Amino acid sequence: MPNDEREERGRRFRDRVLLIVRAVPAGRVVTYGQVALLAGSPGAARRVGAALRGAAESDDVPWQRVVNASGGISTHKIGAGALQEALLRLEGVTVDASGIDLRRYGWTPDGDVLEAVATDEVADDAL
DNA sequence: CGGTTGACTCGCG
DNA sequence: TCGCGAGCCAACC
Image (cartoon, rainbow, N blue to C red; front, side):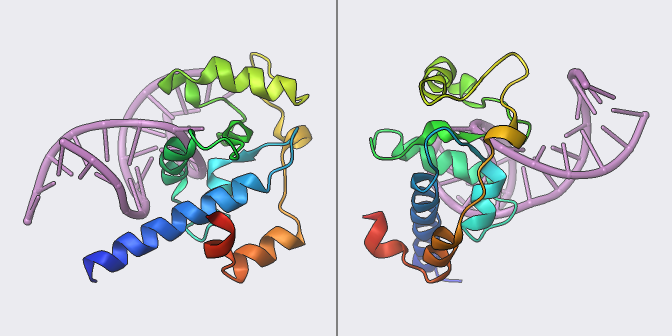
């Protein structure tokens, strides 16, 4: 498989991740695995974090709404944990020692998002 | 070109 | 329940 094709795919994955994350409404959260799945790469949860790391500077990406599968904050490792928790609380999300209750704040993509991702509407929207 | 790394997950004890 | 270890997938080095 050509090298540039691999890059191309990697870029698309990142764009899709951003598209999906931006679709998450305030006050709700999604897991890395969930985003990876929606982005078309089941099992690539770790890459979601890597993708967001670069987009963290971009102010229109609500990266704070992405948490791990157990409802915990994963950004403590990169020193952004306190900030993420603060941002989430401002949106009305309860974050305690046990983390976040996904049954309560977990978000499931609606039809529009699913369609946008499915129809590959990424290029226009993501940039 | 092969080892390392990491904003992850899941299964098992 | 709660760690812990072993997969996972690319980007990086």
